[in-house]
Amino acid sequence: MRFQVPQFIEVEDKIFGPLTLKQFIYLAGGGGLSFLVYIFLKNFVLAFIPIALILTISSALAFYKLNNRPFITIAEAAFKYYTNAKLYIWKKQDKVKPADTRTALNDVKTYASVMVPKISDSKLKDMTWSLDIKESLYSDRNQK
Image (cartoon, rainbow, N blue to C red; front, side, top):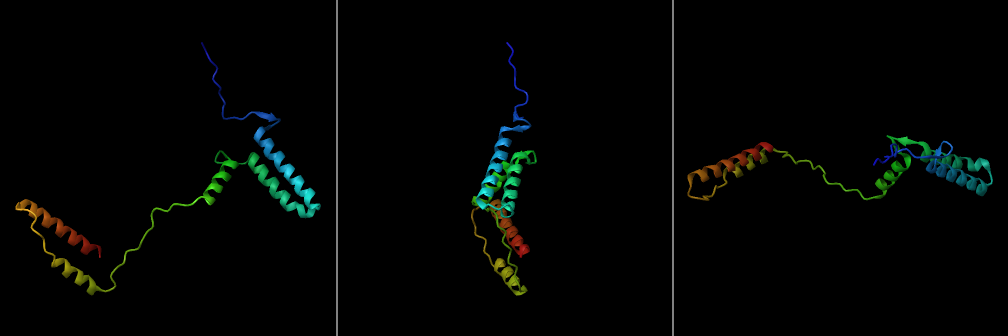
């Protein structure tokens, strides 16, 4: 038994001549709103700028695509971006460098006077402990 599989499911049907239902609603809504602005202001010179803005937005909603995405999707994403709270995770903090070389020498003397405790009787563990301490001392000294 064979079934027909729809081929072009991403293409909307043209209902009103060359316009889809969404395009027609956007354009009809923009035209109706422009007419209401004209009636309310009763002067075409005063109503020209709002009418031009309304018709531009309604035609962008109907026809304009940015990166193959409808303008309404872009406008919705922009609205959500500007209204939602932002989460900043990483903020860079500058390292404080010593201004004087005398403080660096005092730090070296402080590290030299550190006593390494005896943690076990095993000579191998003592050697690895002392190597780890010396590595951390030298790396701290090189960072400053």
